[in-house]
Every structure is written in structure tokens, then in C-alpha cells.
Image (cartoon, rainbow, N blue to C red; front, side, top):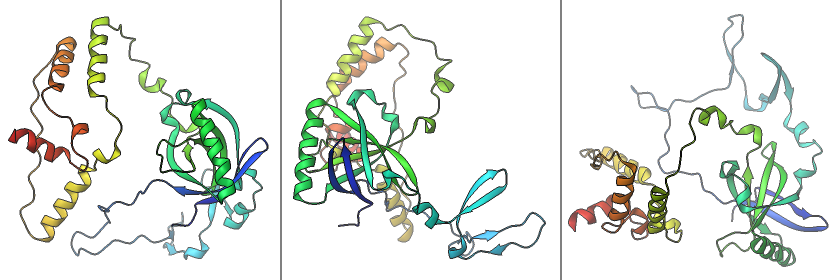
Length: 291
């Protein structure tokens, strides 16, 4: 098992549990690109250099001499040593204090950023988390608090996991309000639209016809698979795979007509969600053609 990302305690009033946090997501991708020189094919490396304003030749800075700098004026920096940051006395460095609970549907999804597994330190802590988990499930709430890691303090949500394999809790790093752009900058020019009752009924019918239990295994990274196919072809000096053609779609102008056709089409062909686990959109299309 990987090393914990953070260790400390979750505290709710006088109730606390010792836990470890582990990233729940794996950001490693097979199709990772590097910068290379087109002529030689050699990898381009970036070095730490300092360029002066008076035109002197830039000089290299060794890794151990690079520290964090806080820009207090334009172009002026105050050096901050990592050890000085570690000495900051923030309670959230070792304790996640849940300060309030909110309903699941009260927090916009735009605030959620990254998931972590909350793993109890021992069996005694596991019993505490089991009680908290059940209480969160039954009240349909999440707990909000703050925690410090990766050189900054984060707003986080503690929630009961949907996945039964997770025997602890889930923690989600959230964005602070100032990190989100103002939606008025993007939606203020859009007029409020009148909702037609018949069109709404068809839209609801369309949604209901596509509803299914969530199964993450049915969703695969088609871009990653296509990239792997491209790399293999180039390595073996084979003909590159042709670009996939966009499916032809009939021109539908009337919304009501589009909704009716969509509902009718649902009963004629399987969707991506209905494909077998591990089956890509490409293979699903092949099956449709064969049929």
C-alpha cells in the first residue's frame, strides 16, 4: 500500500478518530508526452536559471538553492524557506475539525475537486468511522472543515462512500468560493426561457428511458486507447489508423420533433451505457452495423 498523503485526526465536537488519507484517484496516464527536438528526437530538458534585467548572461541555480518566493510588490519577492512554512502553527495541519454539516444537494458540484480515502488507524478508530458513516448516510449530509497539506489549507467535505468496498469515509478537497469564476460573467446575457409543459414531459420521458444504475466500468478512456493504437502503428511502421468519421445526423430544427425522435430512437439502438463492461463506443458501433 502507498504511503499516506496525510495523517491526523477527524474531530467533531468531542468525538475524534485517528486516520490516514490516501489519494483515491490515479492521475498516471499511459499516453504521457514529453517535449523533444524535432530534428534529433532527443528530449528537451528545462533548467532552473536566473535572468537578470541588466542583460547579463543567465546563470543556473541548483535545486537545493531554490526556495519559495512571495511576491509582495510587482517583481519583488520575499524568500520563504520550506522549514519556515512547516513551522506555521495551523491546527488543520494535524486535525480536520468538522465545523458544520450540510445536505448533499446544498453544495454545487463545481466546488468538488479531488477524492481521498479516509482510512482508520486501527480497529477502535474503525468503529468510530463506522458510526459516523452510518449517521451521514441516514441524514444524507456531508461534513465541512479545513485541512492543511501540500503547502496550503484546503476546504474539504467528509462523506459516506457509496462504494461498499470503502470501509472508512471519503474526503473531497473542495474549491474556495474565490477560486470559482462568477457565473454572471457567462450567463448574464442569456434570457430566461419559458418551459413548455409538453416539451418538458418528453424531456422527462427521454431522461427516464436513459436512466440506469451507475457502473463506472462501462466508461473507458477512448482517447487513451486511440493514442495507444497510434503509437503502436508508428513503432511498427504500419499505416496509421484512419480518423473516425462523425456519424451523420439528420437536421432537426423543431425542439418538440427532436425530443420525439430521441425518445423513439432510444428503443431502436443500444446506448454507450448499455454496452457490456469494457466495451468501447467503437465496438458498440461495429455491432450496430453488423446488426
